[in-house]
Image 1: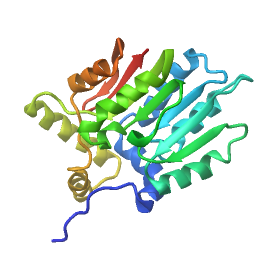
Image 2: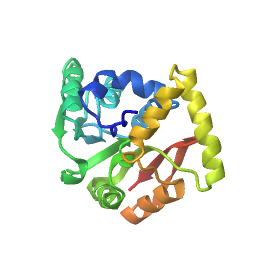
Image 3: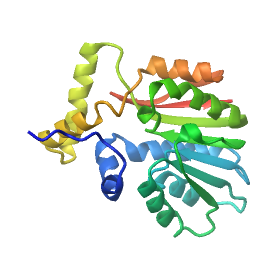
Image 4: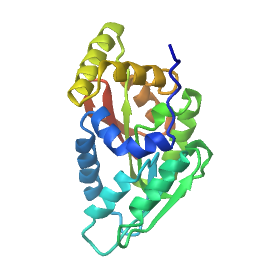
Length: 231
């Protein structure tokens, strides 16, 4: 039997990414709606907004399209995948009046500028565990007072028996979205040593240790969750 190669965000994945993530991440569109709701409550005229792990640029595109005032923020998207950045640039370049910059680099190697909102969707889980706290510290330090950090992640339940239940339910979700059992198992094997999820408790501890005094869970569906931190 042919070994399954480890998952990576190469050109092949980039070409199917938008379809793949909507079929693989539960409530993906609703998470964007949640981010847009929060975005609408934060004054962002002329402010800097980061998307860490911007992939094909959907989040930046939706935020930009939601703006209904003259003052406009500046967006910076960061992604370590060259093919993702290429596709992101093509997508965002079609948007009128969008002020954006894209950085093709590992997040841990980028020095952040002062910013008002930082978004990190399903990205920290792919970064080595020993580097996660230092990244979140940079996030906290770069935020202005009152700035907002939004993070969505796949999470791991605290107890193994519950993890088995929610994993099975998650695979049911993927089957409903057209994935075969073989595809599910191949994806699981490919991600096994690449995507390392934390528990919710671990995620909150990271936010606290990064410097956030105000933080909480704002969404959870089985083994996926979103968090907010306010400086």
